[in-house]
Image (cartoon, rainbow, N blue to C red; front, side):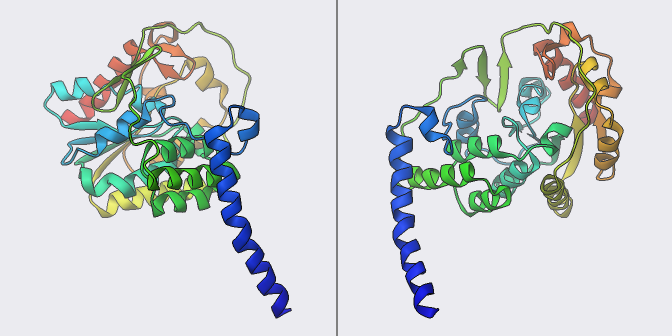
Length: 306
């Protein structure tokens, strides 16, 4: 039995380097997405995460830090807050779930030292596995033990594979010279972490009834986030950005999510607090256009100025 265990251990020691080598070659040279089904390294992908991660390295002593999903980085216009003398940064990322928010806060909170955190929360972020956002952060920020911790909690092959390639890329500075343009399609990166999109308008449609099913590991990560912010005595305001009314009203358990977030502190659900014309303030069913971003930013600014 001892001999069998030893042989199996030696087999794994041989296989793992071979696996890593094949993974690196596949990601580097394969032009076919089907061959890379279980690895995705989206450096410079949607949401300008690479630019955001470069900029955050140079910041400290913020008045306000925004965190959350694309609803955060396309909803809270940092320019409006800066016009009122506030030092702000938007650390939102595409499909950011509490597992990624936790990583980013552990990595940057002590450096940024914000007086206030505006945490954009929405039920979708609590209802998914976090794979998409994990890949985004692995590819566009430097990786460390926190990256590994996040990968283990998500426990998905694509995340493990992408992280292996991420460590390889960081170790050998493979993408050191990569530069992301400020203008990408209809999106423009604004210093401070905000994304301004070309003005577009939503065309209303109907939605079938549905229910949010929150993932346990996301709720646990959210609790950790709340405790970290509480322990550091950082004022935290939880905000649910508005979505189009037909979509919001199609979800039958919105009140349950409200009750959960409300138990952690000051919480503002702007689906209930604001009346917003779907065709004027949104560019799709769950993202604000520039008209909507200005309105929600003004509302949040009122909270900070009171």
